[in-house]
Image 1 (cartoon, rainbow, N blue to C red):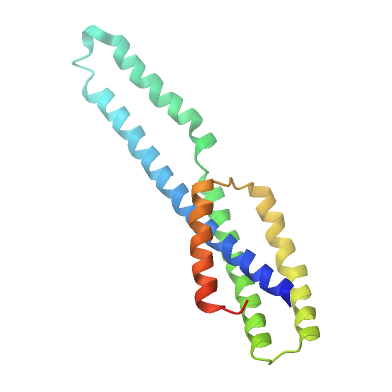
Image 2 (cartoon, rainbow, N blue to C red):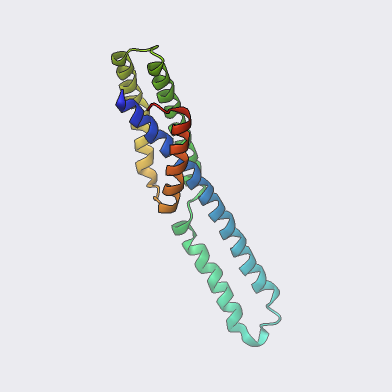
Length: 164
């Protein structure tokens, strides 16, 4: 049943990482929109002041256009963010199944052979779908997010699954 434990830990890590990644992407998107708005607005308001320096106004417009062009290279689209949210829920559902199986095994409500059979059924149905979507989305791994995720995952597992 060690396989179940490692899979459970891996799913918890994935779910926590996706949660943090989604928050990061949403914050990045909001920040980008606010900055774009501020640059655009400042260009409009200061048009009168830059009459003699038209190149400054054109530079502001060029910056806004450049930001709009690279936005999708830096920030995930709304559709991607929605898909990542769906993927996170899939991780959560799979984790919950594994946690229930692990708990039943720990309390001897399920034998090891039967537990492993259940695990492989879950893996075939749930994990394959998760892996397909995960591969399609190609979620970037940020070291700083991974470090925070590692700490949070370990805290959870140590608190609720000491004998894993």
